Length: 154
Image 1 (cartoon, rainbow, N blue to C red):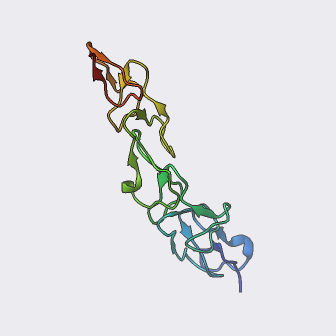
Image 2 (image 1 turned 60 degrees about the vertical axis):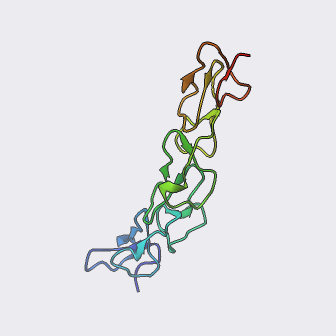
Image 3 (image 1 turned 90 degrees about the vertical axis):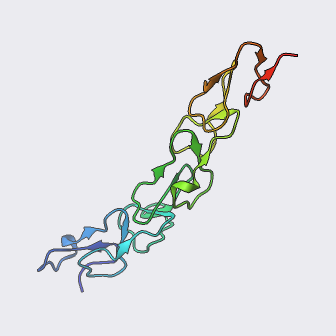
């Protein structure tokens, strides 16, 4: 038998271990002497290279999808949540796992596990803000303690 799990060779006539290729990122190879990867990495996981199972956890061949993004089936690199959203849960598999940034805060970085910070003084954020200056506090209104919405002067 040639080859080891975590590798494959798609060329006939290859019989030496050095003829094998590392299993492609996004896929896993669970059999020795495979001519192609076994299948895509499972949803919620990222497979880097040489993965031998669809749900690797060793941090070298793959891992649970990290916070700040999501991993559909066949993921090599996690897809970051878009600006204005965040994801503080590991193992996410769809875009719907990204949450709109909370009112009063902005999410200005992709792959964010939480809001970047509060909105800037003199501004407010109603939710989904991707920068600290989503909306200017209008004249006649006071900027709120937590800049989610201005309040009229009394």
